[in-house]
Figure 1 (cartoon, helix red, strand yellow):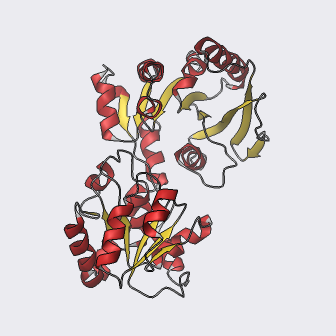
Figure 2: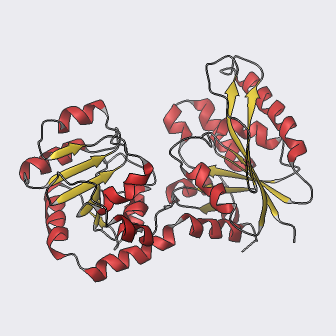
Figure 3: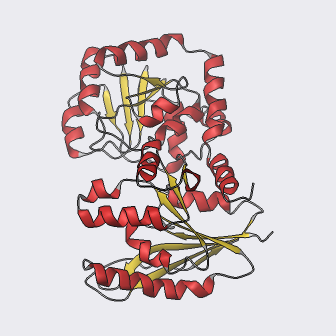
Length: 365
């Protein structure tokens, strides 16, 4: 059997300081013997805009390159499709016939690019967000559906997105849910627990690690902070203006800002309970829950698809009273056995496990 060749048409840069699914999936795929080559195509560069050019990178089996959009006026669908066809023409010679090629892509705008490669590779649309909802226009809705229906396989980050692909008529054998994952391990937690990243903050500490944007329920945290003034809230990540206005008046809420990746595990291990207070409208994959589990700490989340799937390892709360009760319980009733159980569960949600699933779906397990 030929080794796999993987081409990733990304919408995020390999040189970003904070990686997500688009980078971690090929990074861990590169560690498998079934994979002979990975070509990571960085987000397309528009020469008419002020953009930093991504330099070519060679790291083991991974090759990073960037393509440029040739024709301006990208807002015009015809021009956008033509630009993608030109990029497809440039990429096609890179598909070494000694490998079995798989092309994974993320943005519906790239559907014409990938169609140009379909005769040379097995195509996968990795559907990580509902672009039509985000953009709110009919053109994106049509492109998104075209990406789903024209690809040989669709991976969806949530089960709800998979149900949408099936409703459109995609065969169940070609549509699979592939959840996000964590890069953290219980072994890292053991080392991180020895650090003291929060020496000036007394306990108990309730932690949130990530960007506190529009999906962060600042009102809930404000009410809980007023109700339990002894609880210290650690918010490690970027904070939206509205969130800062709501929480900045509470002395027990510590807005620490964006932290280096190396500090995230020590930050989480330095807390007594880890929380995911999402607003009711949140509909994505709550990736931070996988990170939280690797620490072994009690994890409490607002209702969302990810949290529901991770029960009983994650406690789901709805409403101030239940949040207050469950945090109090976690602070007083946690045990070493419960922590070990959470850590063990986290290994099922590491990127290594997700890569094994992808290889299985491609017939390379």
